[in-house]
Amino acid sequence: MPDVQKIDFTPLPILSTNYIWILSHPTLDEAYVVDPGDAEPVLHFLSRRKLKLKGVLITHSHNDHIGGLKALLNTHSVPVIGPACERIPLVDHPVGEGDTFELWADCSARVMHLPGHLPEHIAFSLEGSLLHAPSLMCGDVIFSSGCGRIFTGTPKELKTSLDRIAALPSKTRLYSSHEYTETNIAFALELEPNNEMLEEKRIRVAKMLLDSECSLPTNVATEKSTNPFLRCSEPELIASLKTKFDREPRNELETFTWLRKLKDQY
Image 1 (cartoon, rainbow, N blue to C red):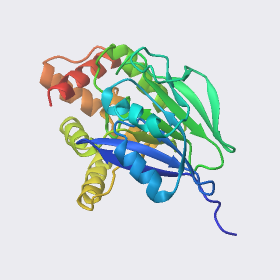
Image 2 (image 1 turned 180 degrees about the horizontal axis):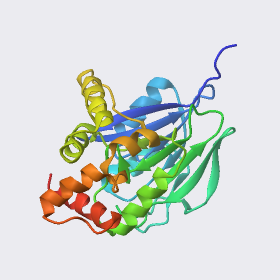
Image 3 (image 1 turned 135 degrees about the vertical axis):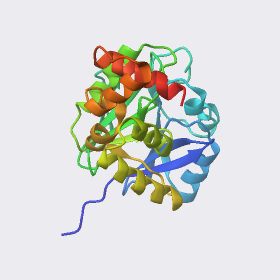
Image 4 (image 1 turned 30 degrees about the horizontal axis):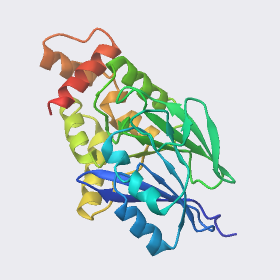
């Protein structure tokens, strides 16, 4: 019996490190776009694949995630689903924590409010038989072996958001918006040089990037083994921080705060 066709997740690279994700239905010739920082590659992709744009999903207000929205809407009259935020006036379907909606039959989205990077930041948790695995369109909250910077928020907010992601089913695929994996792994290995899974990931990602492949998505299980921001109780990581700061962090939040400070300077 042949495999049931699934939604295709296509990363469109823009700027220096960004990905715009295109979610295309396997049989309906329809697609959603997530965080269109630039319109041109989206329009080219839709035209080349002969896809009808069904809607736009927005995670937060940074321009590298919404910069192409106006131009995209000039040629496609579709709903824009995102957080209620005055910096994103083109969002006409505002959503928040716990809201649910249907992308297609057998694929639904549940909204998670995940502040810390920016106060309005949301993610879209996707479930349904059209997916190979539960999936999270997570914007800039979590990256492969890393996390977003704190622009308007607190370490506690961001850690809480990451802890919520870590609590998702282990096979949940994480579709982040930046190709930061290689640098993030290098930073993580300085703190946990004996982490064998992290070293294996470094080798695997290096080959992918050498072959001009996207290193994403990652998944929750992989991140719990290789992402320092989800490993704030690991003894080797804590020992490394003690060496750098000349004292041991008092708790996981302080560990997280120190990690983010070090990564900001990396």
